[in-house]
Image (tube, rainbow, N blue to C red; front, side, top):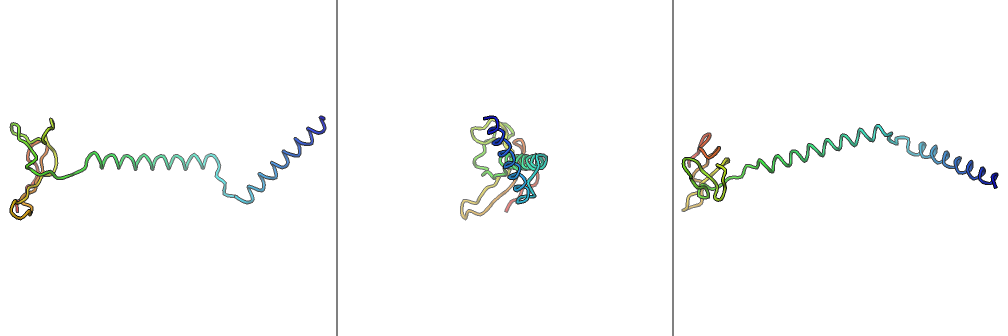
Amino acid sequence: MVLHLNYKTTHSSSVIQRGNSLLRRVHPQILTNSHQEFILKKVAILLFITSLVLMTSVSFSQSKVNTNTLVQYGDKMYKINDDKPYTGKVFDLHKSNGNKKMEGYYKDGLRYRRWYYE
């Protein structure tokens, strides 16, 4: 019985060795652990940068607001139902034809930068 186990053990280990050498010959470009770690780090960095750019673009989106939807409290402009002074682009349209009448920018509820009237 001991002889039988030894035969199986040596036979199975030689099969594994032949399989490994065959695998190396078929796929000589198998990545080592250090290569895999390097690739995983690069992918993680890429995912982090992509998510950071996406979150930044969503949180700092520059949508225009019609001036008619802003409310003045004191000397500052606020969005309706908002407790922070408005910061962003604003516009107004002519009621007769719908063309742009005015475009400007508020920062912390106060007029900021150059305003354009058409």
